[in-house]
View 1 (tube, rainbow, N blue to C red):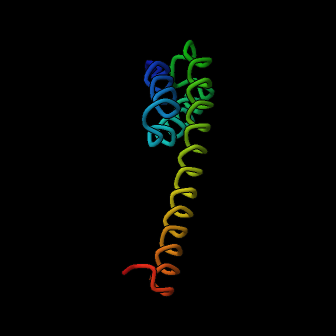
View 2 (cartoon, rainbow, N blue to C red; view 1 turned 60 degrees about the vertical axis):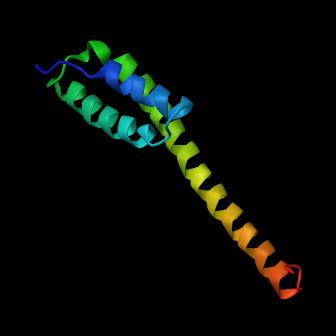
View 3 (spheres, rainbow, N blue to C red; view 1 turned 180 degrees about the horizontal axis):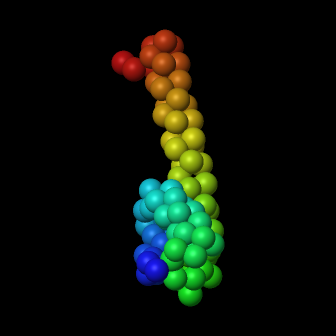
Length: 93
């Protein structure tokens, strides 16, 4: 039976919320694989609760990552529009 990676998954999930949102999808994928292995009896199930908590944190971190990417694109489009309007009106002299 394989040892669980619950602590690693939980740390990645928490890091995705606090520092680095790219850790969210990694924690989510690792948790899905580990939970499947735990349910199949191939992995030590003692870390199941921590793995589930890491998965939830990873999902939330992934949502934050996607929202941040969407807002960044909207921000750059707005900046480009402002510069375009300013240039077309002769505001840059």
